[in-house]
Amino acid sequence: MYVCGLVIPVPGDRRDDYRRWAENGAAFFREYGCLEIVECWEDFVPDGKATDFRRAVAARPGEKIVFAWQVWPDKASFEAAEAKMHDDPRMESAGEPPFDAQRLILGCFAPMLTVGRSKAEAASAGG
Image 1 (cartoon, rainbow, N blue to C red):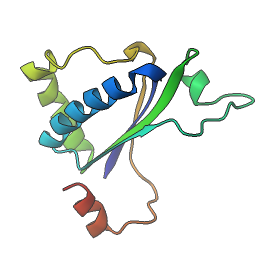
Image 2 (image 1 turned 45 degrees about the vertical axis):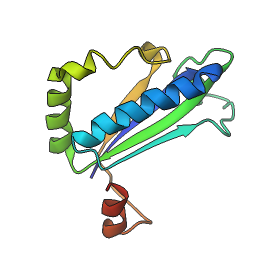
Image 3 (image 1 turned 180 degrees about the horizontal axis):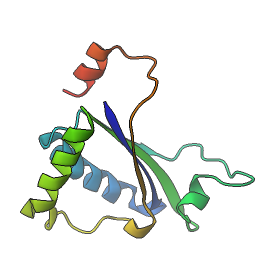
């Protein structure tokens, strides 16, 4: 398992635009082997004393935080998909994202502990 996580500041009035953009992207990622995609719209994002999600992405007034992740079979699958996706001409026609992509945070992680779903449940969630 390999996990890509994102924190994205999205204008609050662009929620529907973001959802459409994310749904299109999810279909694309699934085609390239992504097992699971979760897109979460801000519900409770408190301001921290030293740092927080808003500061991390320099959120502006009226922006909401999207917390998203993708689960890939492994790092090699993710890297192979990334290379293929960047060569796919459909990437050029995906349109402009409904947020400032320069402030998006992306990080990829190798899980060190998972608790909850069994491997069978995790696999079925991806398909």
